[in-house]
Image (tube, rainbow, N blue to C red; front, side, top):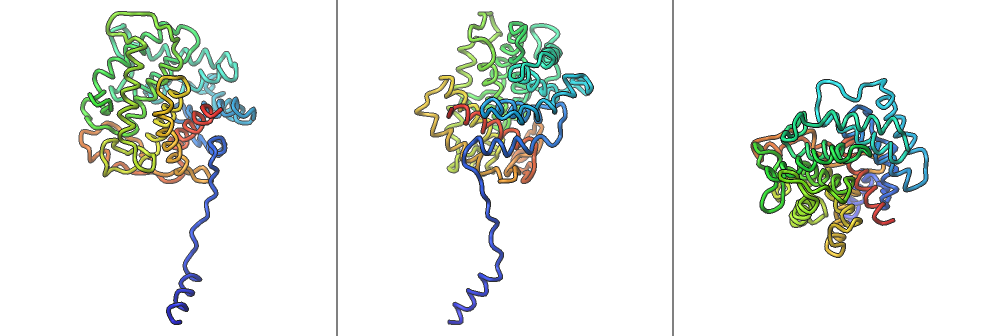
Amino acid sequence: MKFLLGLSLVLLVAPLPARQVRPAEPLDIARILAARYPAQPIMSYIPALSWSGQLRLSMLTGEPQWRDKAMTGIETFISEQTPAIAEPYRLTSLAGALAFADAASFANDRRANLMAAKVAFFMLPDTPDDDVKFNTRWTDDMFMAGAVLSRPRDEQQILGQALRRMLKTYANRLQRPDGLFIHAENAPHAWGRGNGFALLGITEALTHLPESWNPMPEPWATRPQVLDIYRRHVAALAKHQSDDGSWRQVVDEPASYRELTVTAMTTAALARGIARGWIDRTTYEPIMNRGWQAVAARVNADGTVKDVCSGTGAGETKDYYLNRPVVNGADDRGGAMALLAAIEIASLRR
């Protein structure tokens, strides 16, 4: 009797866990994320992913408020009130132009198309034998340049040639025999988001460049070569998926934490690959679905997110990556990448 009385008191005094109502559908999660992000509308790939996601969400749902929100954020750059190209020049900043190209495609904004092309040409190397300007030689560059050089409607041959050379060069330097990517030549570790950047950059090239790539001699990649890089990479990532569907901060380190951005980017790239027939649906759809569940589990009902690796440069030791701070809360980067995954899953299921 005393035991039961004590238990009753504990139940009365102990705080109840907060009840979270989380929609399971990708479009519902996309709406939550599109409403919250970006908090900082700067020239960067991070808000650009949110703006791109909002434009695509509007196309999927027919709801104009998402397109209007994106175009409001982009307007200051395409009207040239705020410079889209400004010092210090960084690919992470210039990659914001990916949203301008999407605004041209989804909102038919001619000014946005011109600005996207202007930024893309600004990235081009001085000679055909060089890498793109402002590169770090990290896998990050594969997405930052890939998302911009692949998109503009005009001059795709010139821009595409630079991108094809870059992807092949970076894959030769950074893709391991097992298919995973190290972050940089002086950072020989399979950082999670670094693998996401590599995979998504390749995915962007395969998506936006014309399928009939002009044959060119070395060191320019052919489409079959880039497709092979993609397939080897997704096969390697599939082997390292965690039991909850996520991928880890260091992909091949079982002791590292499960991280949102690599999970979101990998899930998005798988969804697009399945939709376009690059990979076998029977094999990869279950992997993609588990990845999506892991993304959804890390998005709260108010749009805050969990398990996001903070901003990270190249590090020489594995401990550097294992000890990077984790963001739990409002985060433009994590929110944008979760939105990307939600849009790709919703598009595939349509």
